[in-house]
Length: 226
Picture (cartoon, rainbow, N blue to C red):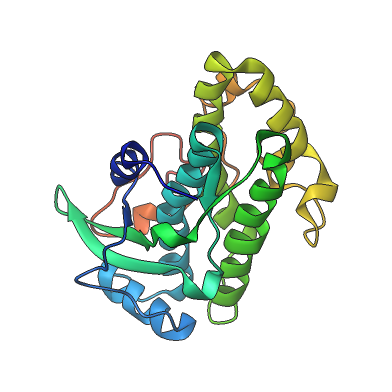
């Protein structure tokens, strides 16, 4: 499926770069990747590095959902083949995501939940499981890193396309759609709280550990600020 030029330009805002390799790539080997992440974000703790990684990955996940809704497609790439690079913005150590336009596949609006499942389970959860083999890190914390960004996305979509947002949130709430996970991380994170209220105050139950990194500070709604 053809990826529109406008989509490529919009993806740059979420650090997703199409058809261009990183000048400073991270390793695709999970164990080596963690060591490189530790050096990049300046921590000696594997778990902190992985949590930082999933704060960054949240941009890619949200970008995928945006593509599904706005362009009827997404990047279908196995977790082993996802490529990441180093980038800096305002002096902060960040991560870029590098994809090929050839991996952009279409999905009909009526079957968009198939794409949701691939992005959340086939990519995100699979990547989390790969990294958890080499780091002691809470999966709840990593999912909150992802879903915090996704919640903001849906709070906006809800104002623009309320019916679509309601259908998607119903899907996200259903435990069956998250198998092999035992229950929906979205339901655990948001519950029945209206989105507009959820994003205007503290949502997290865990700390993302950004405060442990020299380049970052304590988040505004950190549940463990001290």
